[in-house]
Image (cartoon, rainbow, N blue to C red):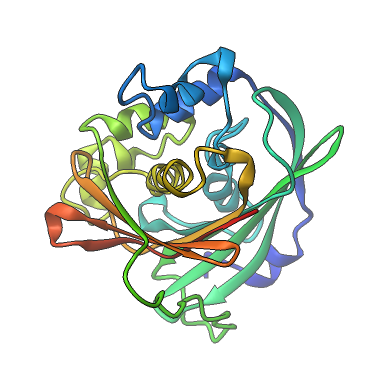
Length: 285
């Protein structure tokens, strides 16, 4: 079996230094659609270095692109074809607001390996700290088709009960035709998001948007709509990637405000509200 669960779990953590600058933050914000309208006061906090606020989901690309998936596939005990890999979900715990510039130590390890029958799920945990202490912890769920069935632990249930009642807010966000090409400059070079031939080999009729791009678009919509644009109020954010997004589509973001959490559901308008993000929530102060 290309995934040796025992070996992957026993592997020593991998530690390295990462760094980022305001230019990296600005590029990330543009990669998730910030700057529309270009001179809007609410957008300038994401696009102008003199008043820059860092959206917490920048943590998913800080320093090294999208290290969770790529690093996870290179860990001991893991040897799989990239074309069979999907990003199944992402969670972040913020220990304090992210600085616009920094150098930190990132420690990666495989925290869990689950047997889903027709697939395996790897959970790649990344802890990041700088000289002042912990910054964030991220869990990346890596879904590997065709690698289950060895009789291992199926893992905890990840589905949540849907929010009660009508959404408090519904907003729509358009995805540019070239959004994936722009977002990949943040460091995720998976050809699934740019190369039609690779996308076809992976089972898609055309390149799809990065799940983490949708993840960032969604968090920005929540912060701007229900948190008054205050990125520092975000304490955590988790979502399951329930479906693909094609560049050029429109995302419908539904939000329910609960005590300490904003529940979120995201769908693709042009495909009959096909699910995109599910079981999502933003914890806030």
